[in-house]
Length: 135
Image (cartoon, rainbow, N blue to C red; front, side, top):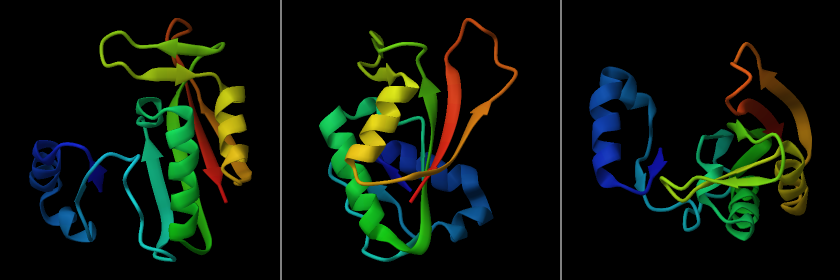
């Protein structure tokens, strides 16, 4: 589990309780600095955080994640997707990218999209949520 704040990691350990034993490591760092152990993971799940990375940092992060995968491993991104372009969030300084931009950054990282899904039944006025499985 990776997060930039130790407080969140501590709360996550408490929240997970006994299930937390399944989490091998808790890393306190930004994703732009995180370096997964090479060939270690079957799946790397990235949810609702890509908007906190610049395009360049996201591409570099995905490349490092790819190196962290075992053979046939997957990277999964689940995140909000804007309807068009890049939409800045004035509250937390993140951005929401449209699906074509996300796909482009995935390809720049040298990854292929092996499955893609949109979460359904969301109100029309909020962002879409998409999940992309990458290899």
